[in-house]
Length: 88
Image: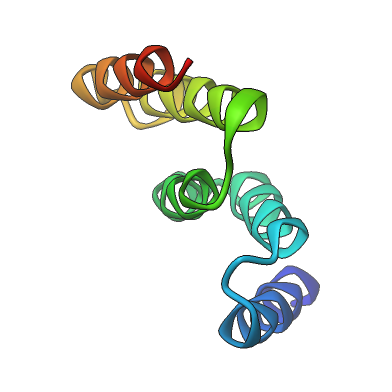
């Protein structure tokens, strides 16, 4: 499958440069498109580790929505919102 091959490609790119933001974003997008929301959450958290400022705030909001809407994890959503406000 094409998405699986793309994920494999981006995983290799991240093994070389874990801080490559475009690859992290691509991983998030692919995982969400495939309905792999647990993976998408992992990738978004890794993305948050390399971001600052407004980008970090937006990522934390996306994490909160992902937790609430797809993973039905209200505590995870609250934690992400708390982190967004703490970093703001």
